[in-house]
Image (cartoon, rainbow, N blue to C red; front, side):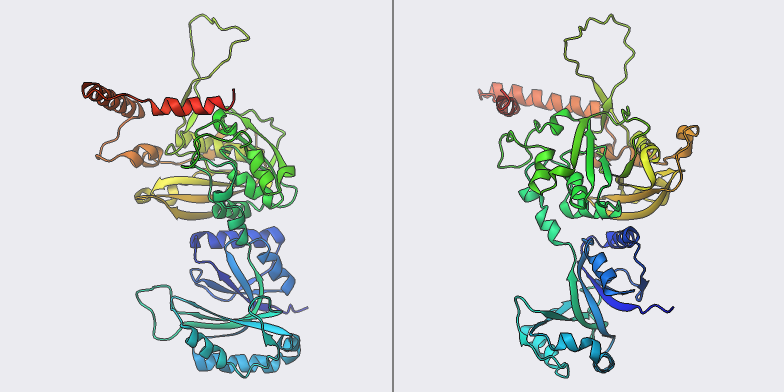
Length: 490
């Protein structure tokens, strides 16, 4: 039996373009959607795609964050005469199917352009040029029954706009994407945030690439303030997190908002999920060192989404193992504060991929970020594992000459305990391993963290002595802020 494919226009927001393909492929796999592409250039703000039916198209729109709108295609051409000819022909051949939309009580006509500005008069002229359309309803700009879209694409380069549009498209608006979630989950209104809280749009894209669905168990081993858990829970996942930073997980760290002096008592990751109506999907967060796994081998996750620390705004730390020959003078009732040491990126990603290979379900996904300096990038620096297949690799530019890539892995074979770490291959060159040192390097030579601390301490001491010589009163601002934070827990 021959399938009757229907053509649609996917109109995307021209933001995070490199993530568009990965999200699309993840969503169609999540729902088992069949599709066919009609255009090759994935950088364009619109794609021409064929789906089997309208229900399938709406299913895709119900999850996509990159999508602005999906439009049922009626005509597409590269010149104006060809466009009007094709549109008239389509209206004539499909008049029975289109009658209910042309006879709707109200309608709205939207004229959209890319890379070229139209005045209101020019937009009206474009609409009046299609006066052969048998539309009978009245105009309703606020709440129309049917919305028609007319699109013109004038290339991607704003410095080289062509004389004529490259693509002209007309169709009926079917549905909007899920971009309203970006504003709904915005960090500006979120209860509990930190210095490294993930942007709402990126966290939603990560949840889509992890194919989070209702009932999934989702884990973030570097949870921080739980931004990724919020997005995963919004798509129906049950969320669990861990982090080595006790103060962060208990919301006792310094506030990151400029206008906030001390944190409120009810700030927490649970409060974030409660704010968005997802508290019932919150399982827990635990204080844990990722380099020393505490999870039972029988625990398995549907997906792992995480943003490991890079050592820039948050330290890359692990609990230090010491062989101490001194006599142990501690008693059972004494509090123990373990010392930490630097957690090298190479070791971190080795542990992360090994953890994913061991604890992901077959077909489960690991979605994580990898920081690097752009001049160092090649596919050889991407971490690899025998049990994980790299499916997507999208770049986001950062400050200066740095960037990070969102990597999506899928577990394609059961973990073999006997193979151990031999099956894991993480190839991160020295230029990437010292990411933090090179990020802060300004004089062309690498400086160790200890040397930097000693240099900063010497500068502070010199400044203190000069202030004493000038007779100025010294104020310890940091100690004052710490006292304010301690006071709210007394």
